[in-house]
Amino acid sequence: MSASGFRFTPWLVGFFLALIAIPYLIYAQFFGLAKVLGIAVTLALVVVLRIWLYRLKKQGAKERYAFTTNDAYDLHALVPACKSLSSEDLKSLHHRLGLIMGAMTVQNPHQLAIETSAKQLAISGALYAFMHVENPKEIQWIIRDEPSKIEGNQMVLGLGELHEYLNKLSPKTISVRL
Image (cartoon, rainbow, N blue to C red; front, side, top):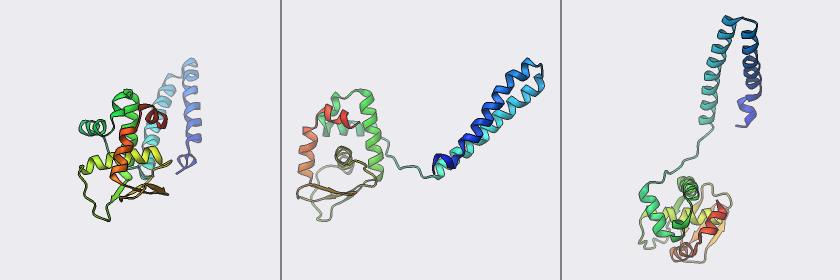
């Protein structure tokens, strides 16, 4: 839904005019009318905000995975460069990785042996997608032992290559993407 679907402008003009009118009504000693107008503006604002928030929720919120302390520990273990990031950059990275992890699917068609946990695998794939895919919406990661390639929303990548890449990452390259 576009911003015009929320119809902000007429409401904002109405609230602006009503709020500007209140001091003039007080100056003209119409205290009762000023109180009624103030209460009406407050109630209308509450109702309109509930409508806007309902429409925003209905618009379709993105799934997001919320990072825990254990996930942050796993990220630091997988990517040593994350230890050198500022707290703001790290928080932003956690948020973005959570968005990617919420929309990412992992496929292992050749049933390759995987030594890491599923969560570590998801964190690794999400970080790789974050660093290489411009707009990682609904990324599909296919685990194969072949050279990596990214086509649209499909990412073909082997685990060995992924772990080498994550170990070579520097804090500067991560900060640039944030």
